[in-house]
Image (cartoon, rainbow over all chains, first blue to last red; front, side, top):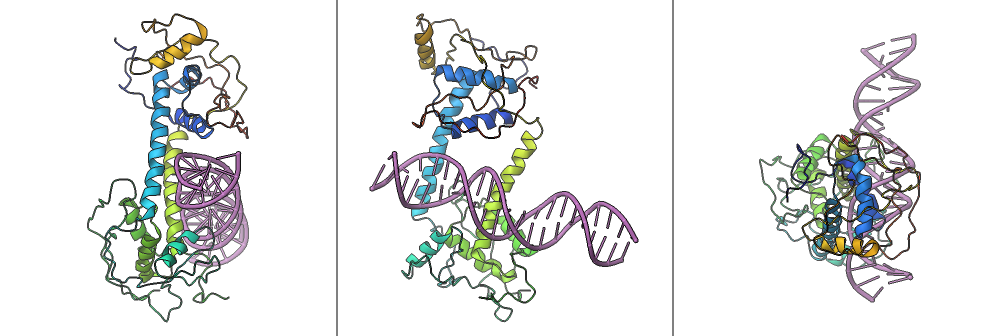
Length: 175
Length: 175
DNA sequence: GCAAATTAATGATTTATTCAAG
DNA sequence: CTTGAATAAATCATTAATTTGC
């Protein structure tokens, strides 16, 4: 069963940017599980940009679909009650109100208010953060920061690195 | 509502070097889309170095992430020439046979064979595709592709978009 | 050297997607 | 089929770099 691997090519398919763009475009347009004929067409077309086989296309859609779903799921789940992750909650913003920036960040406001007050109004006053409102009130920086130990982000659970952290005693007068 | 813009401050946030360094450090450590709470913390900390609001932090991550990705894409794609989409779909793959790839794609073979021939045999000859078998035989790309008009997929009938398509004739020698 | 003019970066908004709930 | 939630992509707009003519 020696596949006709073009000699001098890696063992597994590596999509060229063009192929990738096209595949993604198709996916966006609704393609999810192309049938044999479709796979054939796609493969033939993509072959213009580099070595590719039908199975590559097939697998690509399989994987892409799965990972797309997985990603979304992660986003939803992590959302409900994320913001846990340690991060020593010394009253940095003791209980700042909310700070919804007009565009589409009301959710921030909602989140924040719901945990303290309930004046969930789109018209809430943008009370904003400890904001350096003026040079007269330096934001009183709590104990320095060291890369902040939050963020599960990428997907790798909360395993943030904690390198030399740019320690900087937060106390300078804002300029 | 004249914001108490410290006299001589611009309309939009301009990150101080310190703020920038910290944000970048966080990004390197995996931070990509901090949630409300995290944004608050970050903002509070960064406020030590100058005027800043939650939205600035939010936008910074949005933009940075997007542009980082864009940068990568540029580096890859820009290298090859522009690509894709253009002319109508002239007989792309007239009627290629079937191409069952060993793994678990028998169903593909089945599907294909059943709709054209009837030699539904798991042992069918792997006639394969036009496949770029070797660099010596350019896959002869039929008339370019235009998002390929297949896929009923999602359910919404074939209502593909048809925007300004970046025309480029599919004929380059695969690299 | 220095400003006006031009270009490159990047902050801020808007628009289009996605999947899943209802 | 419609709507909710949450982006990510595309775009607009302003600031910083830089180029250029003097």
